[in-house]
Amino acid sequence: MSGMTSLVQAAGVIEQKMETVANNLANVNTVGFKEDQTSFREVLSTVQRVVPESLEERFLSHEYLDDYVGMDKSAVIVDEVGKNFEPGRMRSTGNDLDFAIANEGFFTIETPQGERFTRNGHFEIDSEGRIVTSEGFLVLGEKGATRSYGPQKGICVNDIDVHESRLKRLADVVENELNLSIRNDKGAGAAGGLGFGLKAFCDATLVNGFDLISEMTSLEEAVMSSDLIITGEGSIDAQSMMGKAPFGVAKLAHKHNKPVVAFCGILKDEEALGNVFDKVFPMVDSEVSVEEAINDSSKVLKNKVDSCRLMIEQLVS
Image (cartoon, rainbow, N blue to C red; front, side):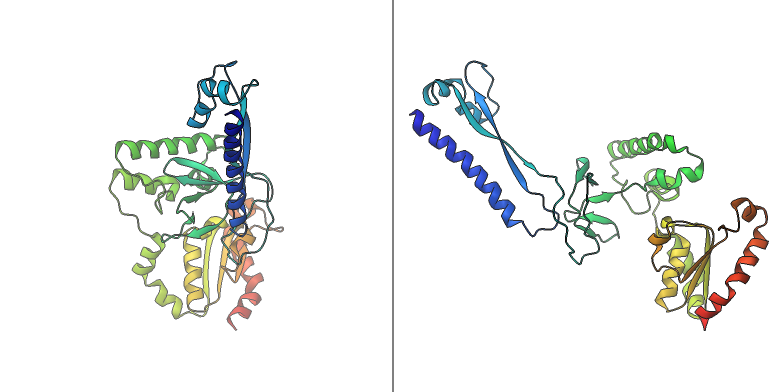
């Protein structure tokens, strides 16, 4: 019987290995797929008297090893099937939302079980304009309410994680006590989390602020009848594309094929802005300091407009 049992056990191990290899081959062209790896371990008999963890180990435990395995009282079983997270070969997929991590690291996603990590960078845009996984899980980033607005409101960089954990705790309490899962709702993080508070405790309905003001002021009609659109903000950066007024103005301008320029105090993340604006003119540059721009803003703005007049006229002509 020992020889027959050893063959059965060996066949099971080989079958598991073949299934793993077959699954890897079947997904060789799947974007973001990470190959499975099978690991094995030796199970000892009565010497250790370990309580079996599974049916497979129970079969190979004390009562059976004595009869079937032989004098060495041990056997090899499949320990687990894990993922190989080594960087794979990168290739272009033609999808702007396919990402790959070249070195160490993971994408963070929000699941019903909480935050989880993945290296699968095959993402989509959901009906609310959010980046999600193919399963619909929200992709998280470093620009939450605390990191985006905290420093603007006086929070020290070293205290950001503390305040972020407090906001997360608040969201957990609202979810558990009020049965409201709204932490990922669009606009919940607006104004440093004010949108979340109003929706959770005041039964407020969140609407896009730019769309509301645009409709009330007939902004689109004004854009259509203009030759040049000028907008601006204190700091134009990647946040400007997260529903802020200059980005909304630029979208309307592009919709009606109107040139759009922006004036700002400081320009950051210029590459992230792409072609949102035809031209951006920051007040602070190599010739003007922050202090000068604040103390004599009217003069600095006039000088900037005068120096940029030719470029602006070329956009209109």
